[in-house]
Length: 298
Image (cartoon, rainbow, N blue to C red; front, side):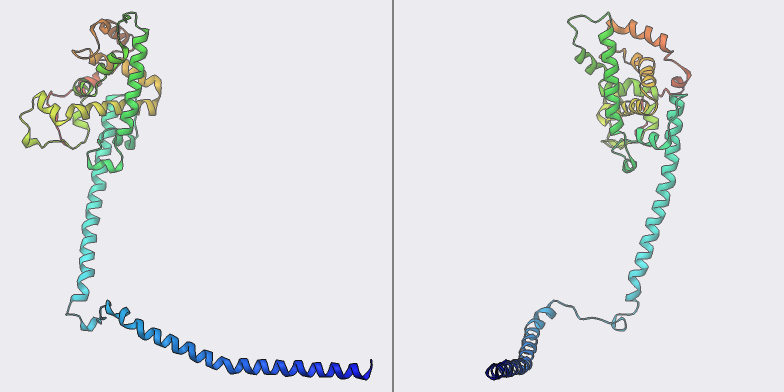
């Protein structure tokens, strides 16, 4: 390498080193000023915001500054409230267990030899208006039961030789399986009013006697009808279509051979089918038959 080239390289290295040293020193010189500026800005912001932040804040009171006994009041109240709720829960649990056993015993006796678990029996016999409905009510089973009953009745009508061309099967089914009619006749015979739980739409002291009109206005027949539908839905769900079909023809359809129910032309056929499939007037239903006036509340 020539001497001139070496001199040029040495000069360049000196220039770079001097520039780097000056940059570092300038940066170090700037850092304290930047730090000082930032600290000043933060301090001024805190001073501006501190009055606003403390304006809505209540002063802290130590336990010693409170009136005597004040700091112990809330725990005692919470403890008493907990004891009240705990006692109510225990009472509710025992009451629910007792009612579930009653529900199960009723269904097992009514539809013997069919058996039902207590949870299902509780759903079947609990109307949505009652406080036990929070554990399950019979609306879903009632919907299923209506469809099951309607299907079986339409199958019966379509296969009946007594059906004329002028008959409207949909209208016949609607009248025969009307919820109030089912509740008044089937629910009365099955003793549903004594087993189910519900909340009447009117108070007992405001009813004008125990006439059918008064009971109908209180909603008893409708609720009993929905419970009968729920029973049929539970039978279909728990024991299958064969059991539900037999109960429909032996224990339900013969009870709606009344005015406003199934037309007279089909009565003899219904009685014949019921006798062939099994007697509808068995000991179970006779034991469950209740007086005309059902108890409205349990």
